[in-house]
Image (tube, rainbow, N blue to C red; front, side):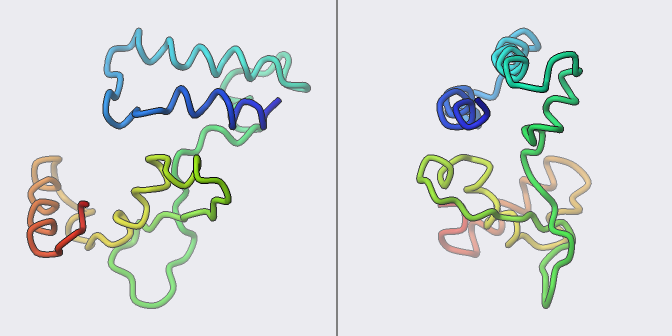
Length: 133
């Protein structure tokens, strides 16, 4: 059931999420409702709270921080990029942005506000050709 969910249902709920990003609580709840209902149908998940089901099914981590960063690193909050064997997972937003995130400098990561962060990103885009393409 979990494989079915990950391959057939989840891509539909995550499709273009970065573009339309639901910011109304009711919209988020509608999307979350699909996952809540489906996780209840999986064996051994009856009677568990929703958060517990997500934890046991490993569905609650969008990104994973790297445990150790060897060698010269640009910043201390590197993300792990898992190998994907299927194209549908390779091109998910959560997988596509990891390389670019890991290339950012510490000063960008430590930005004091979203406006400062955006300013640093604009400077990087202007100086590092192709960074945001």
